[in-house]
Length: 506
Image (cartoon, rainbow, N blue to C red; front, side, top):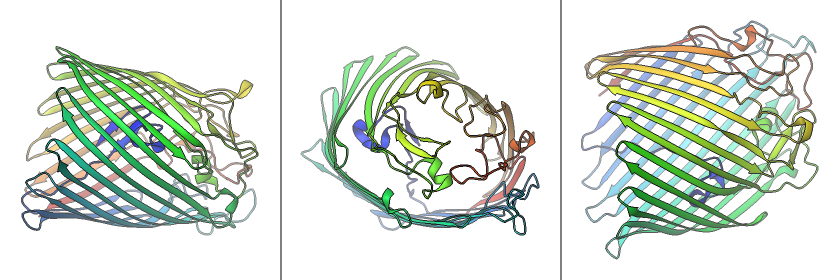
């Protein structure tokens, strides 16, 4: 997994306004491998997963991932409302790989996911405020496919082609209100990569199309097409200094033309490493937000035309390695001009006149000395959102958070791990019980024992049984403007959970 912090629109487009998480596919080895995993939780969750990797010929190989997941509905605090939604899910994902000795390669994948999720009041339960049951459900079907191909040209240059497409259909029910929508995305990119003395460059063209078709609320439909061109150059200025500069031009069919530059520098001196980066980007706002995902579109209003969000980020990372210890400190500043924000009191989506700002620092310390490893983290975030007297911390964003993870691992025998996470106070929005959350600490642990090709494991999450409903009810005394009957979750709702299972390699 690769994480790119800050605005990364220069290479990845509008969807990278908040950064990029790149999940790298596991490739088959020279020998066939198969892994099966089955586990069960104390809250009635069950997972069954099968992964297989197989070389087919000297050039062809493939992998297959199949999984089934089930969860029982749970009313942990016995108030008649499902604190843990019930669901059933099936996933199928085959992958195909091809490559030869000349540097040509092909990667193709397809995937399908089906999920049924049920929440709201428990069977035979009713809301005390209405005397009626309130059921929520979400049925999701998703199909996707992707292709990556590359071939050498002109000796040191490589031509790469990427293509991906996704279709997701959802059937959501909020009580008596249905909502059905279909989302489609299509992305394609052609890029040329080359090297020269002390530098590596890439240039290319891209095209993206995304659509939303909400059956019951056609006013929120959209169809965006965004062609673009981009370029990046990494230059080794000195042995201790590498500079990377990139830029992208996107032509949005609704919001116009955007130029997104990004510059970063990497400095090395002995055991010290420093990275400085600044960048800008944009995002085309839609009616799909975290708030509308939870409450639906039927009550949402948009009174004025939305503006494109424009993001700017800057960060400084300083890393020091001292034997088995690595220390990293990060200062960051991130703001979004013309942010599209939902006002929960009126359930209105609008562009705010003042920017949303996140600034703070992060510290990470790691210790690796076999068979022990430990990681400690601390993050301070000063976030601001809103206009005038309503401006304050971004809801559900703690100023202070910290974590500590320790692991003892012996090759061929097993491992033992412990973890602790602190979450500070958070500003709450549209909560009739409080305006600020409580701080809390979560503890967990893992024990795994290996017997040849079989691994048996047991882990516990939230050992202290921290639950939000120990402080306040989850159910609101009256229905909110957006239709919700529950407050936002700012702490765990499921409490202490044990999870045990078996993993077999064959």
